[in-house]
Image: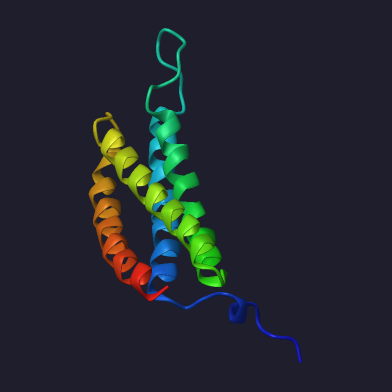
Length: 131
């Protein structure tokens, strides 16, 4: 009998929260892309367009880094991935703040994402102690 696909993935709270953050980031990014996808009158791109991709890229990287940290045998390797999760979380939070200064309907959803990132940070502190 073949194992199910879900048996390879952790069921930890932090991993699940990382998946939720990715889904939320992707949905919020779609609002911004719709607003920022057109060129400005002078032919330039909107200054905040790249931050929308950044929040998706950073959030999609959270879960694999958590998984890598949980699978490492040596403390030094775990710390490397834990540091990566911390950097990604901080960058994601900063990019949310940058996008909140934009003129888009999507910015109304950023406080929800930042609230989820705060919950994630609390889970992260506990998670780091258990590794």
